[in-house]
Length: 250
Image (tube, one colour):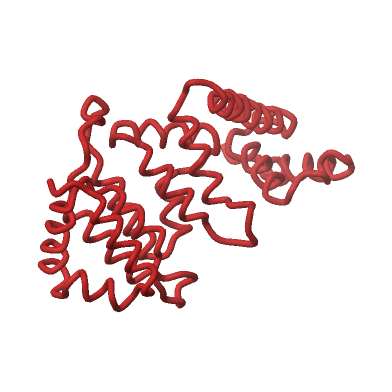
């Protein structure tokens, strides 16, 4: 049977909203919050007061979960700590805008395996109610994201294999190329010397560098040394060469 005019769920909710608007607490809500509460009442057929209870109840539970997860960063929960570090790098209150790529890179490198990365993602979701991988992707340029993605993909699958040193010439070559073709704000190009330094420090030997040179040539059709000379200053080239020379041959 059809509901009589003026007695539909929408009509009843309109009346309730009109009454609520007379209250200061309703006007203190954001337009998005008022719309969501009204929709909850319409969709479920409950009173506006009940919809408000549900809305703030869910928010309270989410906040308790986030605070509980956030509290772990002060203890031994390394996954919560890494999630917090990644969030801080993305939010980066220390500058006017932009991500702290150095801090983000450091946190991602510290995560020992893909299995650990998944746990960090879960902790991030609990703390900040957001998808960590999506937040990283949205806040970086294409070249920055490519570098971070290679760092993640180069990790062993299981945490039990985390102690095994990374030997990934192809991954290093891709990260170096991304550093040479560094792009900020979607239109400014340059070289990310911090990203280059991080790659070189990961290489365990001079042989690892030679293997990376070979992978770079195969992947991009240009010599790695050519790009180094073309993109770095004389002082940076010297630093780069010294870091390689300090490593054992194998």
